[in-house]
Image 1 (cartoon, helix red, strand yellow):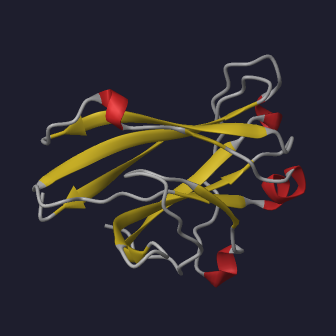
Image 2 (cartoon, rainbow, N blue to C red; image 1 turned 135 degrees about the horizontal axis):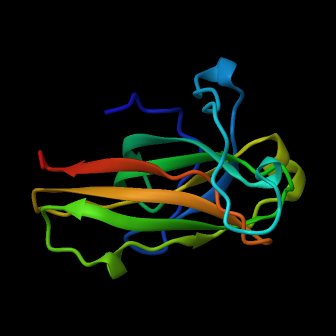
Length: 160
């Protein structure tokens, strides 16, 4: 499991929520961007496709309403064109009672200049009482249909 990052933000809307925040430079503890080209599916070149740099997981994060998120994934990305619009998340595997429909993506509403510098979109997951794990694949899509590289991450709930 990765080391928790500094608390950037949290909010509550449902079991899985996302909130946008500006990311910190690598010198403040965030990983550097991965090397290699981003995958694309649109017509623009790979140099304008978003880059999903990393996913870091924080645990037991206050939700601002007296409760806690069990796990908050922070999605660190750069969108060179400043037009990232959607974070797609897909269920890869689980030993829990989940369907792929339980894993939601999220619209991205972050200013273009922030996306160009590097931004963070934060989620929230409540484990409940069951013991299970979820492996999820995430990637960013821009307004031109370009898709970033994908990163898989695993949430372990109650020792699962």
